[in-house]
Image: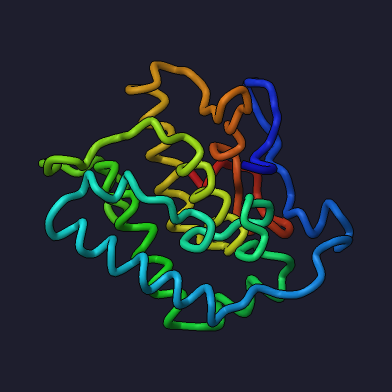
Length: 200
């Protein structure tokens, strides 16, 4: 896994700006293949929907973050966002965007989080529980940050804070030795926005 940040656990982490801003665009040539991304998305979303109908736990065993929740520095570069043009291309496709929002909602539900009501699922079904997969939550937060989806980001961050207060007992989010706490501090709009986490 590339690029999710190498910050020490501190009281306030400054989130990394998009890679295309940090690199000045160097090495970011080309654009996301929207057609390929949509095909992968639909196939995986069909699996999500099946899990929601029959077995939430099976969703946790699949690998799909790269194309379902695209970021700027993932380990599968063919699915990475390379610039604002990619953000606009995806957000300008209503079909992709509707599926993206549904995918975030279902992935959160598999952890027992009601994204729309911004609270725990009151009567979770078997398999609807936190899996200690910090890196997936971090990617989902970064993806909603890059794609400028404030309601999704704010609810995911509320879930993260709830996890930190309960399951994690105040501990930080990690991938191996990499601290992922930037997920708590993304703000939107990311170009000239305010400074409160997730608009909270």
